[in-house]
Length: 443
Image (tube, rainbow, N blue to C red):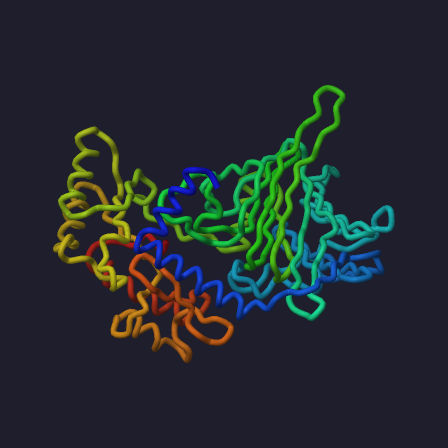
């Protein structure tokens, strides 16, 4: 921690919001202690020596002394592999069914006692000790996954694991979700757990908001995307490679994924950047096409204190000849205790304001925060409690509603993995849409 971090921490703890944040962290640690038992002594495990293989649709299963690896090439060229019986489903990332297996891809013996699956765009080679290589049709290695390692509690429980990978020396890493450091990922450690650092933040604050175990790796040999389909907490360590000068040796790039539990499974898509992104969209579902105005210049910040302030900002763009397609009202324009209700004292005529700005070619967009104040009598809280057999809000392993601190105070969180909850939450947007203000999604 440097001096700036220390000052920020002191300011946070000394504020009312800071005290609530500390209380929330204490509550969360208690919940984690109850739900996640102490690991105690652990036993390390690696796949061991190769014991045999069994062909299957799009690939097959390669068995080792202490694990097994399933490899399957899907129609469209995406490659899946999963250890210890991990299957593509269930998955939060894949919508509906997993893609069908490519019947042309077959499992066949490889050199040095290993096995390989040859497909149109990739060759997957599995060594006799559990390393997995992804090669282009010409034999160039795009990625080499070293044999994984698990640590299993002796008393039983989920195993944590680590997967180390090597990429070409000239490869560069991108992705891992929304990062304060930007899309290009330099050498460092990146957390896999959604969070908010609070207050002001900079490139060194990580993780931040939306984290995803998705890497886009670009090199002269080709572009590929690797997605470790796992929702547990973890971290990714990246180190860029170094090309040898003159007669020097290349040092490959390195990626290390450590996860606290859950399945060890991965999807890989390779090809040109456009083909890779197309393959990724085919796996996880294409995003909805936004309206044309949403692709133009937009303005968003915290602290529009009134309708007058909004008009002043829009007028400033006009006076300077700057284009503006949309202006976002942040969560500070809400009633602090009602998620979808505007603060009428500062914004007495939101529909009128939206219509006025639309006449100037500017859309007024509302931000919605999916945190519901845990206050009996609150309309959204009470309605959520009546959704489905167990309510709309996330619950812990003991069936109790999970609570946390957000800007309006103690809040609960809709469980968007439940279709009934998604339908209920989507219906709440009608109030905002009726006021002429589209919603920019949840934050």
